[in-house]
Image (cartoon, rainbow, N blue to C red; front, side, top):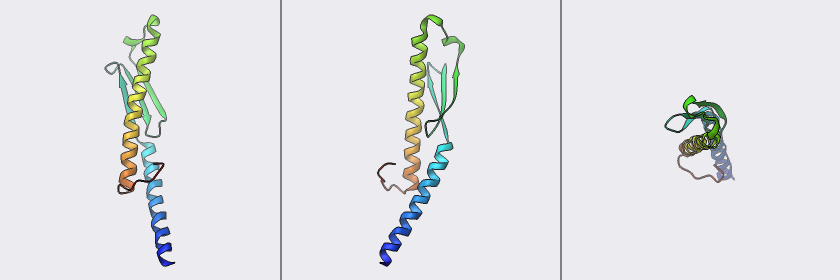
Amino acid sequence: MNNMQQLMARAQKLQAKVDEAQRKLGKEEVTGVAGEGAIRLVITLNGELKSISIDKSVIIADEKEILEDLILVAFKDAKAQADARYSQGIKEATNGLHIPGF
């Protein structure tokens, strides 16, 4: 029974570390870029969009689709960075222990 209590205490400590890491990581931001920097999106590691910056040079009325594509590329860039940093942060918090769902 003592081993079970120790195991539960370790699991609770690990959960607290993961919770803290998630809280901290959720505040970090990354910037996705497209069009050689003409489009910049800032998102948190949780995927919350914080800001969009669009250079005037890419705002051309007849080329709306190009602007939309650039925004999508910038978001995908930011999301890939966010996912990688988030995964690394959780890995560090769990000392490399793989926990399903994180």
